[in-house]
Figure (cartoon, rainbow, N blue to C red):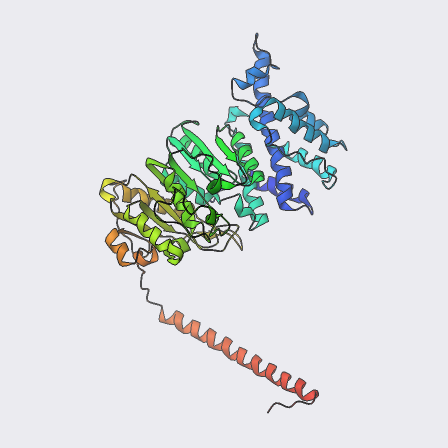
Length: 505
């Protein structure tokens, strides 16, 4: 969401200056690893201070920290020790040793922390400066700022995703989209699953949703899978920095070939799978039990993902996920038939067409699908279509973001549609060019194509004749100038040809 990021933004600009010529994909692990180290060290120091004041407590007893779900940090891994050695030429080796020590003392972090700080290509002077910079982030639970480092970590993830462009989108989904998905599926309590979880933003936002609505951390159980090991490490640190227990696992085969949660039936699924993935090993999975609605084409994983999500949904489960717009209308290789079968099973609750330029890694138009095994009784046989393509605002030359107003408009529309009663004296109404509740019969007339624009219609707007005249005057003037330039170029080409003995008449 659009907000004053002040502190995070200033910190990012300072850290980015220290990056120098280092590739963003490499620098990401350097910075995020140090932020994580600062977080667990601060958490440790806060409890350490409390234990020192207690008569019978031992502040160096590891069990004291385990019992309160705080990572135990050995002396030579604590931030104070690193800060004291920030100017030491051996600082890279000291940090690597610190990461090793922390992993040895905390089994849940084993194999997760980055340990490449001593490599020769990393400028040790700038590394020391980066430690000093991150050292300015304060942690003090008394003023309720425990999440400051979590906010910084999440903000930096987004900035690195932007810097990396296409590759960045593989580990990060823009926060406004994640927040919208979470607000609509409303994961108050239960099991939440993301089989392509990237850096874990869906899980973080889900926990924030629960806390915002008066719940407590731990009311939802986190399950996930990721096929990219470095991304999985980012996810595990992202969750650890917030104290979120999880069963997020990695294997390099991925969720299709090696489903780590085969028996899971989730209450909520939230995901942003790779768009139009052609390299998903579909030719090896032609006889899979997940393909209840039809065998997905080997050349596109869109409907493999959709059916994977449905397969893992519990009897009253709801799923919200991102797909390319092609999933709404494609009829090639049996995709249209799969979509029809899912619709006939009355599972598609809502489809939202998104604005362009929301993602870091693709210009492909995208949409949100919501699958619900437990639609409201008065909405059985109906699907809500929302056309949000004209919403959002540009935050830079390349990137668009949904504003708070956009977010509220979309989420309120879904809430009103689901409810039989009025909410704040409002009830759901179709809105021309924005939203429409369509029956299965109406969808069938459209050949089971789910593009929202087919259902919501469009407003006819009378163009101001004066504006039209001004526009036509400008365009004809520009055209006249272009004709003159064209004639000038034509004469130059003729003269050049004539100079080498060829004449154009």
